[in-house]
Amino acid sequence: MKAKQNISKKRNPFNCIVIILTTLYIISITSISLQAQQPISNDFSRTGECLSYTIYYKWGALMPRAGDASLSFEKQDRGFRSRLLFRTAPFFDAIFSMRDTLDCNLDHKMRIVDGQKHVMEGGDYTMDLIHFSRQDDRNRIHTKRFRNGESRIDTVEITNQISLDMIGAILYLRSTDWSKSTKERIPVRIFAGKKGIDCFFQYESSEVQKTKKGINYHTHRVSMLINESETFKNPKKAITIWLTNDANRIPVRIRMELRIGAAEVYLKSAEGLRHPLSSRIR
Image (cartoon, rainbow, N blue to C red):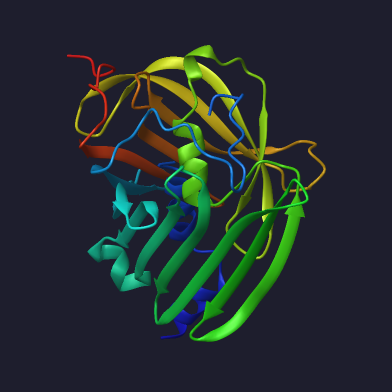
């Protein structure tokens, strides 16, 4: 029992995995301003799309399956919803069980309205609510957090930066035509907790990437750098994402460096795609 309590107080690597997938569905052409209350140009997905992933925890020569995740895009009464579901594998359930649901709600014009995150970690239930709006031509982000029914966070931030929640970051990446990109860094601010996090997206190269199922894809490799010092100096490369080099632009692999080891995410299946998966090498 003490071991579980000690683990819960430390930074959980599986929470980082969820951030990947949602910072993953892990993630606009630079001319698109995907800010609060501004529409996303959706030419990459359609209602009914569902992507399934297997997550591994790599530590030295060991690489056990850590969990499974799915990413979906659906129509709802007030617009659209992009949803991420994550659960730990049975082996890790015995160490630290996680059941996560993350939603990004958009209106009929594909403008981000709010984000929600529901997390069951061990015996604790946490709910994050993030509301996006515009105030004096700037982005206004209101974040609330409740843990086991008690209010823990209630903050408002106003910024000129491109502002995204986790799922919104994925949509941002997927709406980018990376074939036209340079290696210029794209600054964004991602909201996933008490305050926004300064990040950069940067195109790296085109390459062939192989999944765990032995399928090869033509991909664009994109990195996400986190600015921990909040000075935009010496940002740390945290995540590498391989997106298919076709009109779907789906993540086929994601790697996140952790303090101990790394998280590896691989595409397992893709259903309801809007375009042919022409990046797949036959």
